[in-house]
Length: 289
Image 1: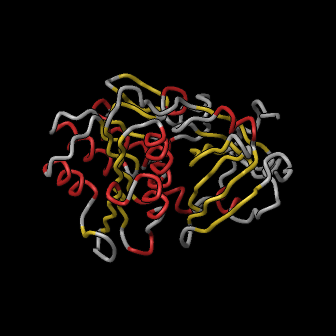
Image 2: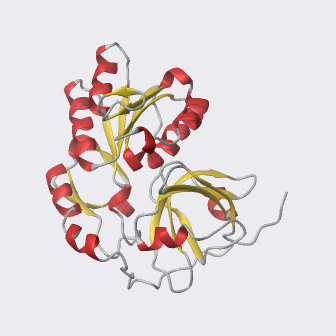
């Protein structure tokens, strides 16, 4: 086995124009990681701390997988880190693992970049013995990612790709495809939604319509990742919860979607103008091998 330095990038692959998959050597994280959990990283000693869901882990070679879209300051900096180079810090695993106990058949519904987060959940459930189906939704063919990897893991007949414009797969929204599968007789013990809030809201409403429990992954709303900043506060069943420490997965029927969407758009104008935000929470505990 090759010898790597701590937090060294061992493999990197571009999935489309702005999405990247990389493996990083972090043996202690890989040893304890479970599907649904996340890490916090810094690109260098002056970098901001950002939380990212792990797309997989391998205890044997000590690596963790990250799939990210290069859309903000830190992810753009990540895009410049090549194989053989190292991150400054990686903390984890954090968050509660995906609940799988007692499940026999599940449908995971991913929308857009949310499919990068849905991928480890679907694969983790399959590895745990759950009969797992996946509905991947994208705007156009050019944005499709992870189709072959999911088919290899779940089976060709367990993966359904839809696009808004019909340029690839079936022309449909994820919500329409999900409801059609249910009408066709597919039996699901649970439906998991990962993607834009409006999509997750409607996915969970369809699940409720057919009396199927739903789970919503709210990882995208985390900022600090430790519960200190309060930026990921959301209302679940009328109570305030923090995505990073109470989640990141919640009962979809209990999420106050209107409040969540309002909060998620609060800084939309500022984010569009200035992507050079630098996190002030640069302290905290460093992960050490």
